[in-house]
Length: 231
Length: 231
DNA sequence: GGATATATTCATGTATGCAAGTAGGCTGGC
DNA sequence: GCCAGCCTACTTGCATACATGAATATATCC
Image (cartoon, rainbow over all chains, first blue to last red; front, top):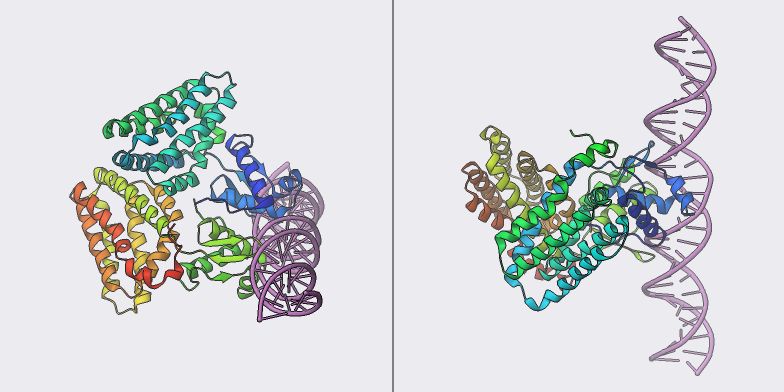
């Protein structure tokens, strides 16, 4: 439910911290303190506290009273459920979109896909490619939700998506092949919508959403300190 | 993703305010100020500010910098989308539950339903009945999600549900008949799960979730000042 | 030497003063 | 009477001092 609730200094600190957390510059488990952060951004504890509270409500920080504040460990169970929610809602929304689909809107989506194609062909270093591609990927999905008249559904999803985005950054580092796969999925999704082929669309969405997750086993094993122990 | 992030005084103020907002003791559109609230709860502005921020992130308050803080108007478009999400996810979760359903768990749910029966038969005034029934209603749904192994999905729903709960309180005032209907739906849902009858289950969920909303037209017209103008 | 009690340190929670900005009234000119 | 400009009152944002509590280090006793 996270629309912009902070303003001014709080908002700036919030954005900066969130970026650092999502891109793992502040790795899971690391400790940050209000006073240090305040000093670092040349402000006082109050805006920092506001930002901390916001990030905690998104699950990115864990505030332990009188002990300290820590970047939360990645919770694979949580991510699994986030993916479940995304898959379920996306299938429903795009099913609705199929019935109201108007080909005249298609150029908007094609435009986004073309940009993704260009990103993949451009000569960017892996981190920058992943970062930009993820932005465009979000744009793709947002546009589809918007076309289906379910913009609020998307903003709900965004409010729980932080943890997953962080995980995705973690996996993506240097994996151009995965992005290529995403791009192909996007094309397929658009085609199936256009052809009103719900069954294939449904399958593609499922794979599109879960593939990263399933391919993650070994890389997770390499960095166990970033993850919450399986309960 | 609203798990308990506040502690101590902040948490107490938060709970108290939330209750008052959800039960319309603080009606939509009304203004509250940090300083007044702090005085009322015999504390300082800081915990009140924390509670305000939290409530704002749930969409229950609107903080306008340097102007004031107001209980947000009920947004029917938003509620419509919340119901869409609930319906979609609940159908998926209970579909999963059907395939793994073990009758030995059934007593837990039956116990909750029995309590609902007793509430309806008891001689409570309308407000108190509605209040207690809603609590039990939530318990019913939480238990089903838990049995399906989708507890996180439920906590996601709870984090976006505030606005809808407020609306429901608004409609429920004195409507025992509606609660009776809910109770009957619950029985039907449990039966269809038990019989592995997904189609009927699906229909019942849809009606269960949307019925209130559709019956709300006239009562909304009576209190236009509580609602966000349709865009 | 080991265990217990104590003190120090450092974190966040809370209280409060000041800054900044908005809205609306109030005053003066016309 | 009306309009413009200022001015006051009130709001939240920000800064900072102090309170409280948890963990660790330290000292003291056995």
